Image (cartoon, rainbow, N blue to C red):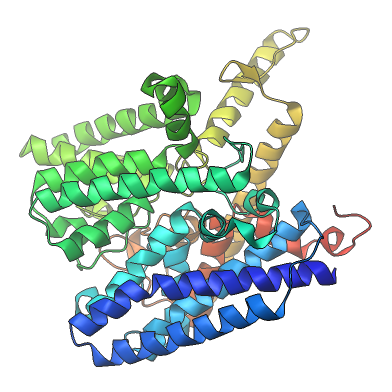
Length: 490
């Protein structure tokens, strides 16, 4: 046990060094733009992180003990809480967000790639703080611990056990023999795609600062913007189309891109989940376009189509950008958007939510139950990518969906305890935070934000965002008596 504590301390030391390095870019921006308060705040935090990180790495020596899956749950949860706390400090110390509760909310929203905000006027914030706020999306998108493992694999900790508790989605397969190599490979893809989007946005005459902010938000499927009207600030349809394309790319399984290098790009479109994900985008976009066209009396069909596709992509990928206020759309269109809250991106993407693979397997399970009722003696199996899904996996997916709904209703109840929000606002706020979507409906819709929530509601939403990003089980398992009994938990 002491060996694991030493390894955990060394891990946090490495993490502090990574966070310190991550704040260098906003530090330079603060210096360049002469933002004195931000410069002081970032300098102090960077120095503190470096001293603490080096001290932990030097004082605690590596051990021979190996992390188990149960250790990964605690390590990952504590690490994300520590990251959220540290990343909130620049907001507080710079004076950009004086309230610690609000700063924690914004920080949790950033690292969990939710994109929900309490800022009513984001444009008044210093550029350095806006950059850090959006960069947390990029760090949290692929997973902060996976990022650390990709850079510092020599710390002697089994990466697979930790990543098992952090990587988004129900599948955690390695695509190379060593997880550190897998992490580096996936991050290379992540970085390359980010650079490509950055350059394409710059070609659309976007400033470098705006291009970086929107690239972080898109590839991390986070949605923080440096403008109050989000992507609607940019009138060029080319900007919207580029962001749509990269939201879809970020919402798909990154392992497919890794494997496409070996077997060709066609292998991506052979994946059942990827095909299901793209079909949902196509069908929902078409239905919303038709409904909104009738509602708008067929005026400006091109813009109506672009807005429909953009909002479908931004919700299903849990990015949370906005080009239109879907809260004023026809009820049918709003209901379709609401349904998308419970889909999410693909497994092992930067998107949140239930994940399309779980939805697809659940639909196959429902289809199977009808078949068995009609033909009781028939042996029907659930297949995914031409491979039989083990009954154990099906049970896990069913358990996840049940816990997801239970957490959703519990979160709704907690948010409704204090304040005068209507039921649908409370419900969609909880659904948005668990699914890492960002905007909800009504009081927390795309034209408003979470600023008017009570402190209790904000803390509840912060916890829901982290729990949702870590696939619920990672956090909820810690509250089980079986977890703390070493004779029962493995």
